[in-house]
Structures are given as structure tokens and as C-alpha cells.
Length: 85
Image 1 (cartoon, rainbow, N blue to C red):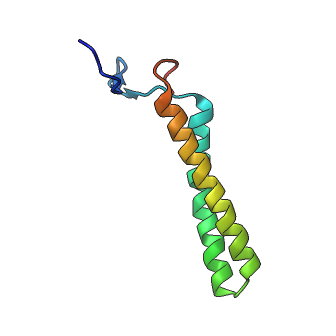
Image 2: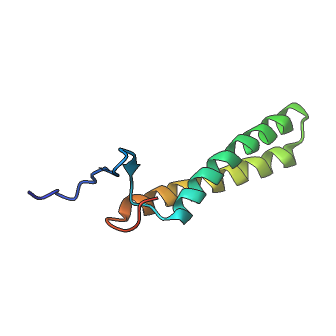
């Protein structure tokens, strides 16, 4: 039976989902999503206090963080084998 290039989720002995990922990708996704919360707060604070530089920096860093998360997810999906993380 061929998988036609589709990704299948495997489970370990305890029933937990195992996905092909490197620890680096997992860290990029988790830390990036954590940073987005604070960057959103700084952007809102910059809008409220009328500080365009702070708002601009927060938005620029948020865009860079989203790009980093997207690239980490793409790397994770492109791995067909490897360690489960």
C-alpha cells in the first residue's frame, strides 16, 4: 500500500501522538508563539501611548516571528523520517 506522499501520524506505546520534528523546530514554534503574545501587548501599548516607534518595532518583530514559525512548520512537515519530538 503506497502512501502517495501523505503524512501519517504515528502513536507511541502510551498512545501519544508522535510527529517527525527536530527539537529546534519545536523550540522555534513554542518560543515564537510565546513571543507573539508579548509583541501584541507592546504593539497595543504603543498605539495607546501614541508611541509609533515602539508600535513599529513590535509589529516588525511580530512579522519576523510569524515568518520564523511558518518556516519551522514547513521544515517539520518536509521531514519524512527522523526523531519524534
